[in-house]
Length: 304
Ligand SMILES: Cc1cc2nc3c(=O)[nH]c(=O)nc-3n(C[C@H](O)[C@H](O)[C@H](O)COP(=O)(O)OP(=O)(O)OC[C@H]3O[C@@H](n4cnc5c(N)ncnc54)[C@H](O)[C@@H]3O)c2cc1C
Figure 1 (spheres, rainbow, N blue to C red):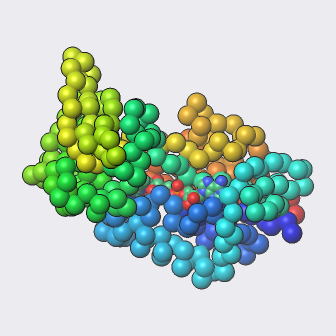
Figure 2 (cartoon, rainbow, N blue to C red; figure 1 turned 60 degrees about the vertical axis):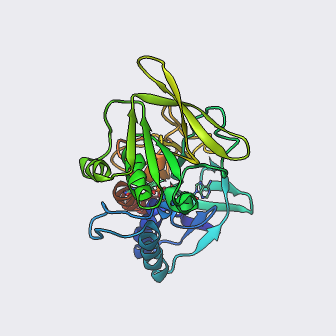
Figure 3 (cartoon, rainbow, N blue to C red; figure 1 turned 180 degrees about the vertical axis):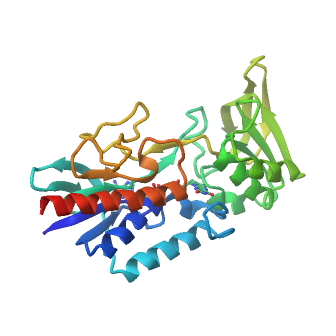
């Protein structure tokens, strides 16, 4: 069967695109490799999505999924490893099967960046974590480090203040890039110490994390701080390496036409964190899902 639209990825962008596509009565499926919800399902609290002042990421994404399923969404669980243009249709290769569609919406999002320092890989799951909501409770009453200075780092550090004994927040710059409102919350927490203008050098231990060594970016002076956990929030990488036929920017984010979100392959659109843009958030992902779906619907109608 040749579908009108195939959406790859079941995060906010993919589910939003599905809602718009289904309301236009498109024959579509959404293909997801792990579980619907995407990255925001890892967050305990989302407080900047309009209409929902405080909600967990999972709760918000359950609402998205219920909405889409209410319109008849069919979710297929598979990991797509290639998308190619066959003229009349696009061919998607997955680990479980192949799929054909007139248009494709790529909504594959991103995954956390690594520090790439000694000890990081060795201690993943033994003290090194990329998700405070998932792993925070394992560090109840322990001393931990949080690395990063953007929205996610500061927000997740705020979450951890309620669970752990103490946090040392390590950031390479003098100031945080996070929203002021979440910075204020952090400054009010009694159990947070800041190590600004420092970068992590190594994560140390025998069977699990015992300490982190950091370096002053100006003086190169090093010190080792005893911690049981290291939470890393230093940015994200788009999950686009399998999309070899599409134009990308220097960081691997997919380039799109700003008006329609069409990629360099006609009929293939990209929405959400996988595409090159300024703000990676649920609100932007949702808007782009709607826009990509609308452009895909027009493309289907033009070729039929
Ligand atoms: C800890 C944390 C806290 C955050 N807090 C906030 C917040 O408070 N507010 C906010 O607005 N944003 C927040 N964000 C950012 C927000 O989660 C993302 O901007 C948003 O999830 C992007 O949506 P997306 O649909 O583009 O991608 P994703 O959410 O990354 O979803 C992509 C989906 O595609 C699937 N996929 C990937 N590759 C394939 C493939 N090859 N085949 C099939 N499926 C595939 C993935 O499994 C995933 O389910 C946070 C992120 C993190 C990690």
